[in-house]
Image (cartoon, rainbow, N blue to C red; front, side):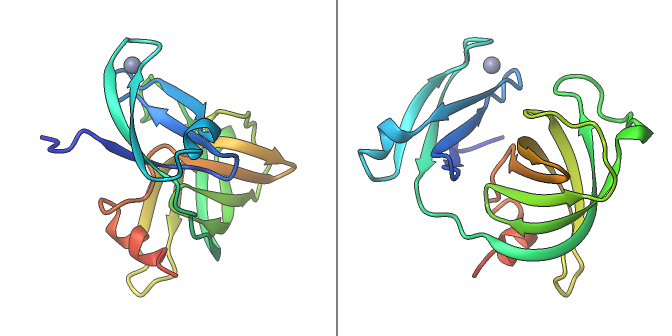
Length: 170
Ligand SMILES: [Zn+2]
């Protein structure tokens, strides 16, 4: 059981946050310019516009550290709602991850696959730490330029992802 229902969300470079409703899986992106004027971490109330679920989130405005990397992995689109065990062979690509932060990652596709903005991808990478930790994360596509993708984690990296969080310490 979850003790603390206040999910911490981090503000991305466009001053936006992505909120995931864990009742129905609905994603919502909101601008935080307004909240930023308050200039301190704060808790806001959210009502899901799909299922009406009420919850609170904690917004953290701390600047996120971005680690330059050269990691290999794969990615493929997954359905927001449907079963996740079927992967379309035509839509898997090897990737090179150029940077990772607590909120997202930038990577290059090794083979061109069909991807659109807002698609949800599953990304599997191997860290270059001692343990060669394998990481699986889901991301939302935020930027596409040729084969270069900027994506945001559906869940920011926090204490639950020990290896990745440790890896991201400057
Ligand atoms: Zn909902």
